[in-house]
Amino acid sequence: MGRFVYKSFDSAAVSLCDHNAQYQQCDKSPDISIPPLPLGKCLLQQQQQGFMSGLTPCHYKLKKKISVNAKSLSEGVL
Image 1: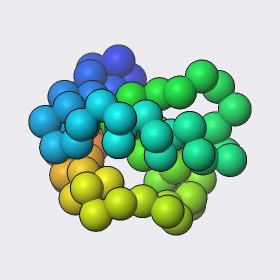
Image 2: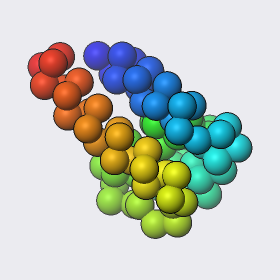
Image 3: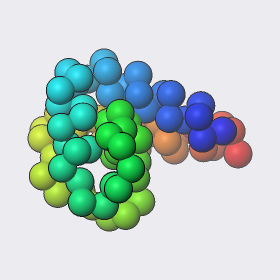
Image 4: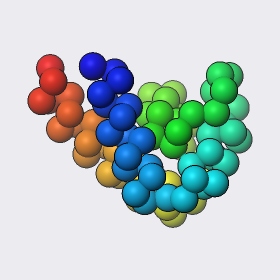
């Protein structure tokens, strides 16, 4: 299930932000100690950890879209 959800986040990230913006914010996150992730995974992890500082307007827009997607996906899958 996780892979399916992450895949959806990745396509949302690609459609709303350019590739540089996607990886730049993930690289700066002090809470992620693994290699850089696509923005969707990065934001999902940041949301779970309550770390949402330093995001650009593009990332806020994407975060909102991801929140909606996560809710509908989890309801559909679970």
